Image 1 (tube, rainbow, N blue to C red):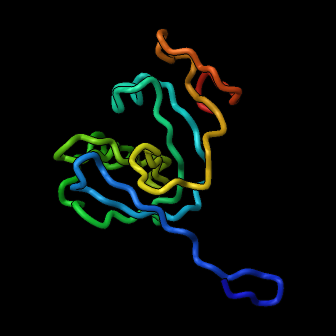
Image 2: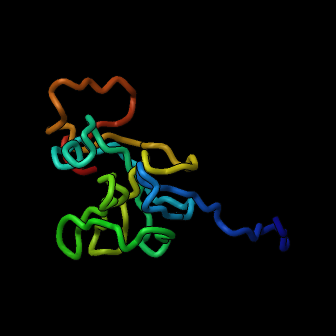
Length: 142
């Protein structure tokens, strides 16, 4: 890293991600603004899991590097979920008036520096799942 005075000048680390079958691949800057575990019924159905761990970042910091033409968009122009059209993996959700994306952490190949800070929509969590960590829990959106 180059040093100028006491300021570091380095480019952000780039993380790689992909769907289950590898048809769709992406890169995203390791500069996430927030990271949460969502327990809403839509996230549970989209992932087939008890909750969706995701990290939010500006849309401009995500780049689909392979298979963009194979994306299956579920929803409107904004908001929407982007799945692989081949294997169905949920890769990201376009949110907040199309300014941000929520990257599903399970599709990252590389580990991000951020970790989930809270559980959201626990008021509608799966009744068969018990949250056992010490993260803050919000009935709806934080």
